[in-house]
Length: 239
Ligand SMILES: Cc1cc2nc3c(=O)[nH]c(=O)nc-3n(C[C@H](O)[C@H](O)[C@H](O)COP(=O)(O)O)c2cc1C
Image (cartoon, rainbow, N blue to C red; front, side, top):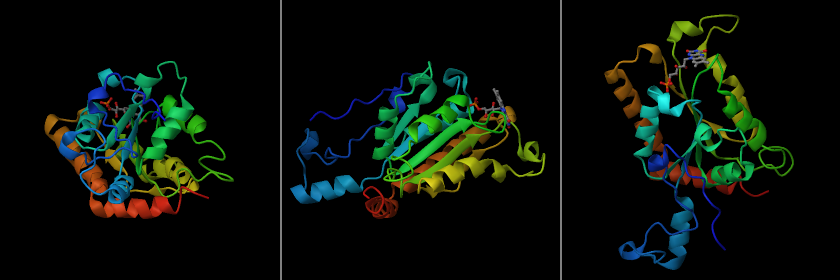
């Protein structure tokens, strides 16, 4: 059987690394499919390899400054798949099956976006509404996301003081809808990655943020993280 087609990201295809978990990642001499280890071990290793999926929602990715640099940093890592929603779906016609297949491959799901009006860009909201379906992500038999890790990566134009408004004057309050959604689907909420103050972000600050993002993501690709993910996924993908 042929593997499902993978939607390529137009502007970010060179940052998009896809590893099909049913293919061997340890080919002998770089050949296709020939494994350098014994057959049974090969499949054990392949199934334990962590995958990071970045659901990237920037309405104008070509005009981005901060997020573009962060995506570049993430793309330097192996086993990272970036899906730039506004590039893939300029007409907002989401391919739910393709999105769910991408989620199934991931051990860490990252939702990366610029903050817009204290919330997420509209296509990302639509993504949640359409992709996290009953019986798949939640409800009876809806265990597809259980055990996967969830990370919110957000940039904000304002600094900390920008969020000192209203009855919940704390930036952390803005994470609540995403965190609750992730938990409701049985995911493991991770400490968010936040870059404040992009309106006044100098190159040194942006480079430091890119290094921090790269470092935070790479921690999920370490063997220990892989073991944790495998254990969680083993308990969450069936049933
Ligand atoms: C429609 C719109 C709404 C925005 N709302 C907020 C906001 O509520 N809080 C904030 O700090 N920044 C807000 N911003 C600023 C963006 O978050 C900021 O420009 C972005 O994080 C910069 O990332 P980029 O360089 O990748 O575009 C808004 C920007 C736009 C276009």
